[in-house]
Image 1: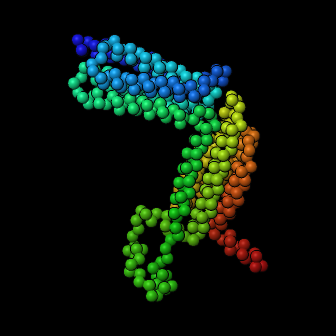
Image 2: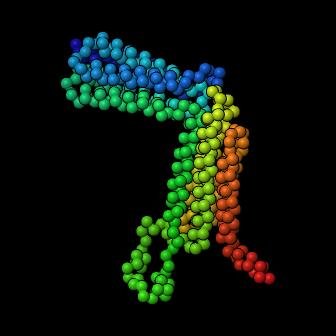
Image 3: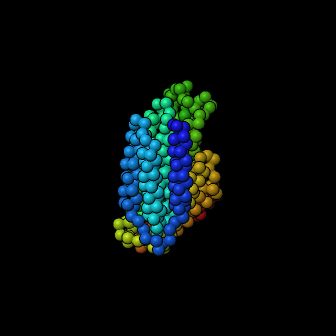
Length: 363
């Protein structure tokens, strides 16, 4: 009898799963801009209903052996709410660009996955004597609650989604900057150290054993290489400032945006993100090339690529017509750092250039 009832529950569960899978596939397609947009607040409210029903399910399936009809009704109510949640999530993507749509898709998937895990465990526990099965159900219901609660933190506008994505790139650039600041010049040769400080005891110096550890990577730059590294660090710092000002710019657009985004605005925001992603890649390349032996052509190419990206950012910002004074000021500071770095790279590429210039000055 119990086996037949469990089989019936499994059949019902699979039918509900198929419907949810089919509904969820709608989120892979962004609605046309003509579709009426549902506010994210409505999605969050429906998520709260799903969360409450998960709590009810947790108590029902872990209580005294409930009637089969009661369990089936609980499943029906739960999956109807879940389907409604997915439909609202889909309608909330009207006018959304790829970045916002991706955020909504990920949030909805989290709710679906946690719901599936809960109901699978619930059906599996039916008629089982294994106490662990029932003990896991409240925890899984809690996971559903967490996934629904996280909906409140999900970006609900293109501006917010793009701003957060650019912030992640800025964090990566900041990590590169931190690493560049850890670069150090090569230590003096032990013989030089003795000649400069005759009374020092060199026996305790870690460099005397002729070995180096991985922690010493980047600690042996020549004076010329160190000068380039410092200029590159300044360039990356100014790049980071450009990204920070860009984030402020996008945030400012959100405060003055219309209730409905235009396709042109969304395309420009997505373009900003795409350009920033490219800048992030080139910053990584620049940082990697600064470790000895430095690759001057690669450094020049990376710096110029970052500059080209920032130039494209300026074009897109002008299209969006927001308060951008701080952004353009940051771009100006970047250009100054770029000229300094390129000048030093040119001298490094032609070691005799500086000597020739000094000779001309003397003549």
